[in-house]
Amino acid sequence: MGVYMNANAKLQAWFSSLSDANRLLIIRFIGKTSRSVSEIVGELGLSQPLVSHHLRVLREQQILMTKREGPFIYYELNDPRLLDALGLFAEIAGQSNFDDRAEDRMFCCPDWFKKVFK
Image (cartoon, rainbow, N blue to C red; front, side, top):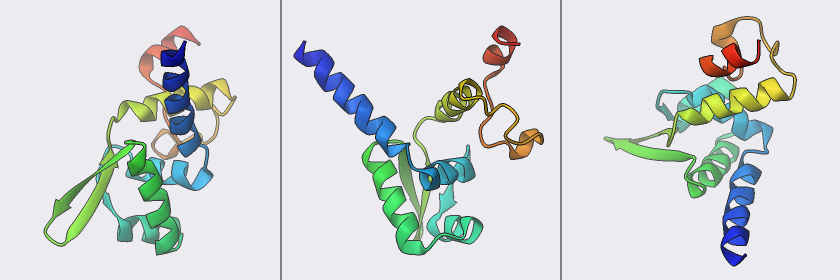
């Protein structure tokens, strides 16, 4: 039973790191690309210390990874399937019409989900 408790505790910590609206905005903005802190700050209008804090939390849970290019550090999703998973959660939560413009939707569900749950 201890193995399940440890796995559940790790999953709880992972979901907890996703339970902040600013972190979800950061994940949405990063999407399937790489973004620097200054790009994130400029686009989302959050303070640099706040963005850095959220990025640290997401890195600690291995949701984001970093890559260095010269003097700049870029953040990207460790696994882009997270966007599909978040889209699935948004659909389940009734957020399918969060934004009618597909390119601007917070998260897009995977095609298989749309086919199964028409």
